[in-house]
Length: 246
Image (cartoon, rainbow, N blue to C red; front, top):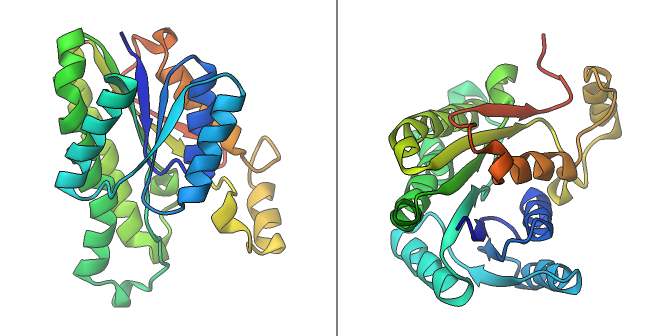
C-alpha cells in the first residue's frame, strides 16, 4: 500500500521541499500547514504542474481534535496515510539558562512530543491494517552541538528521537518503520536575515565545505519512505555534511 504521504509544516521550508520530493516518488501528498495558506497552495500548484497529486490541509497539529480531523480529511480526499513526515515546528528562541521557564519547555514539547504522538496515534491503525507504513520525524543535529542557549529545544529534540526508538520497536512487527532525519543548519526562508559571517563560520566547520540544502534532507526522507529502506528502523540519520564529526 504505502500510499498517501502526510507532511506537516509543508507550506514552506524543509516541509515544502520534502512534499515536492515525495510527489516525484509517485505519492499523493497532503500538504499540512497551520499558517500561510497562499504558500501551501503554491506548493500544491507546483506538485500538480509537475504531474503529481496534492492537496493542502490547514490544521494545528498540536491539537488533538484538529489532528483527528486532519487525518480523516486526508484519508477521505487522497486515500489512507501510508507515510507520515513529522516536520512542523514552532519558534525556537535562544534563551539564557537562567531565563528558561517550564512554559518554554512545554512550548517545545508540544511540537516534538505531543504533536508527533497525536499524529502517530491517528495514522497507525490504518498502517497496521495494511501491514506496512513509514514514519519519519525531522529532528536536529543540535543534540551533538549542545548549545547552552537552546536547552529547551535540545531537550525536546532528544525526547522526539526517543519516541522514534520506542515506536520502531513497538511497530516493527506490523511492518511499520520509524526513523529520524536530523538536519544541521539548512538555510530556509526563516533564515533570510542570517549574518553572512555566521554562515561562513558554520561552513568552515563542515567537512564537505558547504551549507546544506533542503533537497539534501528531502532525499533522505524519500529514501526512508521508500521500499529501499524497508529494513531500516529506529535510526537517526544526520544530514549535516559531517559538521558534528568532532
